[in-house]
Length: 158
Image: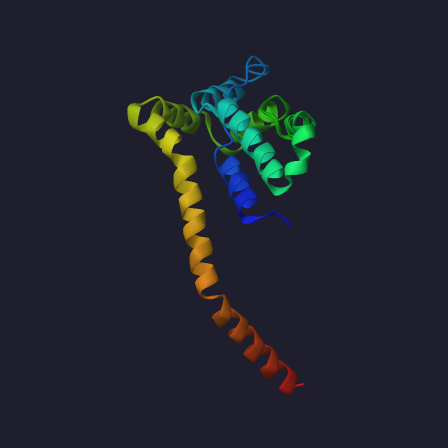
């Protein structure tokens, strides 16, 4: 199972997935808009940072792996790197947004506040995730008690 820090990085990655793609822009004007959105959001750079962080996390968990750091990084790049996912990500945006919506989102992210949002979003998401985890941990005993009570009631009614 992933540790919470890995989950947080994966969550950030999934929320910040959009970046640069040019391969299929000519095939569909709308797909070209999706690709422009991904470029505007600088997702290629975010993916590179994510791969670096995931590699570092693996090394922190097991420092003996330092000697194979390049292999670990290569593995994550091979299966989670931007070059592998960019066309599929553009296709997802193409599928879920109209051309007008893509144009509006691009226009927003090209503004100063849009760029600030992109810059701050990973930390905001991480902080929000940490806050939710803290709240959950504070009340885990309550959840356990509720489940045990419910199971007891169910067992008595059988």
